[in-house]
Image 1 (cartoon, one colour):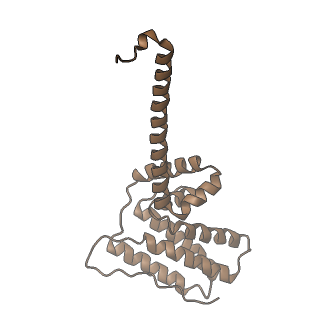
Image 2 (cartoon, helix red, strand yellow; image 1 turned 60 degrees about the vertical axis):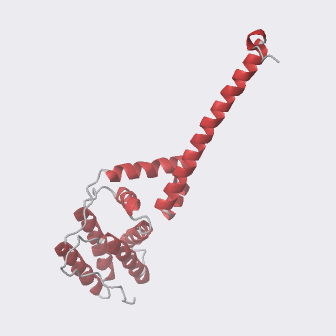
Image 3 (tube, helix red, strand yellow; image 1 turned 90 degrees about the vertical axis):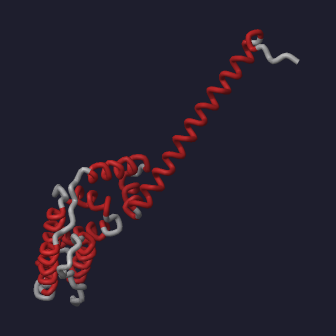
Length: 203
């Protein structure tokens, strides 16, 4: 039996071409969807709670993922370096000193904690823009603790308006400490490093 002669049946040829085009489009769409799904999973795994926060803030998953990808590309250009043992010891001593002053002056301790985190970020090589930019930059490498930074900052801002209790100020210092310890990365050395002590003061 001879094969189908498409030349003698142009309608069939058009149908087959249409089916082929639809199949190619379907394959391209499927490949794109798979790529987007894998990218979404990667971003969710990397950013954790920050992924959901960004989606909720922007109200659109695609916009949120574009924002997170932009953060990654921006931070890749930074020259983030670990601290020298001497710098780490100096920061650790400064933290322990401010913590010991909390009972006498909790408001000053929160201000100093915010400033010490700022100085530590600058020393590590983070560009020191406004708070939201700093938080976004931190979220790329430290997504689990950036929420602590935002919570501490929110309390500090309320305290500037006279709206924070001593217990809230204590929580702010605890939040700052979590981020501070995360950022206190040190180059390998045999020299001892003074780590910040746990906050144990009571309001």
